Image (cartoon, rainbow, N blue to C red; front, top):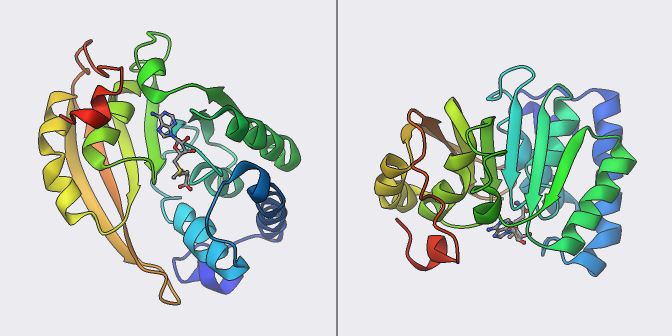
Length: 228
Ligand code: SAM
């Protein structure tokens, strides 16, 4: 594990390795019940989930607040929390049983985070959560134009949306309109290749430069049915 992470200049401590091992066990034990990931082989989980989630570790400023949309098995949030105990995460997940699993992970690993069983487009209309966070993040939830409507309303001006994506070339141009309407500005697309043939990925950083107009997110599934 240590060698794989060091390819990306992430130097794991013994305590972090123990936590990753414990997380791997909980994920494996609960996968059959909660249907968390289609990846079952240990090395593949390590690279495609743990390492991939960890690539963004240095993006987040010290002590920042982060809202994750569509946490599922806990990616990228749980690896990021294992690596950075200063980050204050709120995990938003639509499926109740997955939230129960995430509560188990939180308890077992002693993570300091809040878990909310709600849809992003519902929570994003709640004034208590709008324009509140330093960062929002999501991985494998929807196309970028849809994700922008889920994730940008939560950010304060000056915050950033960190999207974990595949190769993403078309998605970025497809999302240009959504980014502008929702108060965002594309900062960068960082491309990387996972080791052992595990594929090409990217991290997209979108900065929040203006408040999101009150009509977004539109709700009632419009984000997916009619993306901006
Ligand atoms: N982020 C995890 C990962 O990278 O492995 C999970 C990805 S899984 C394919 C997508 C997750 O997003 C599911 O658990 C689903 O319930 C959740 N989800 C989808 N749409 C959502 C929404 N609008 N609000 C909250 N959660 C959502």
